[in-house]
Length: 392
Image: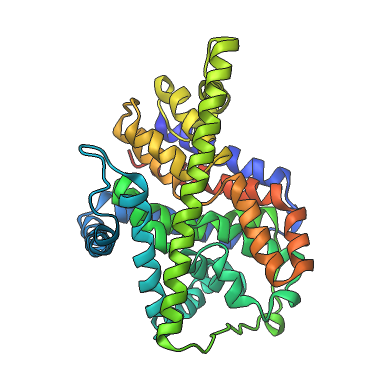
């Protein structure tokens, strides 16, 4: 039965993408089939094989050690402020982002990340049938972040046509920054986080190929990445401050969104006898069921999916892991993979703001397709969730 539902889910997701496609006749189906096949193979490898378990264990171990090292600096500054018996989210989850950001800066300064991004992107371009620029951007977004990646493309930004800009923005919103992966692993099972990271790379290309198909002229596919010349300590200071800004911004967004959701829940409960999240749960329950969530859990799961989209992934993750909801292993896998992306309303403003700061005209262009950008990246999350649901 789950395989039948999974096939129906894939058909619905692809149909939803085709409904708003810019040019259905221009869609190239061979790369789509190849990328979908890669998603299934990688999901099977990571979730259902001993080799995959070892890979995830190694990655999880690396981030566990990094979070431990980060805690040394955090405890030195904020030691003694934790609530006994409770996790202090800002201190334990968000502040380690400062250390991870510094580490990313060092690896980029030494050229290690740039080497990996270029050649992984080159390999991806052979699979997805797109340009090197799009492939570079997808890998770079997963490491540098959805707004920071555009800084590395600032020399080219003014020359990028609208159809390619949409693909760049979709891949940026469909991935997550490596700087906050450690924070995700504190709240979610690392195997689902790693699986989502891999599936996001291909999922973003699949949806962009359906919604926004085009062929890149090799003569126009020049990749000139900006590498700013900075001293080591100038770079290190900048990345440390960037990491702290990210932690503070995420913390501020959590305060605002959680408070607003609490207010909405209280108002809906007093007026209608049902919470706002429960209403969202009923609206999204058919979609939750379609991607593989058992029907008796669909309303609660749908509420978390909606929370992630209208607020952000951290708010939904907190509700998932610290709330009173008890889900089956299959539902936990589906929801965890669904949540690991930047596909939410606030990301529209982040991406548009980042591009606008570098090129005003291109920022305005990105703003015009903001809702379609969220639509496409959300379909990526549903696609990835469907694939994972088929393995449980």
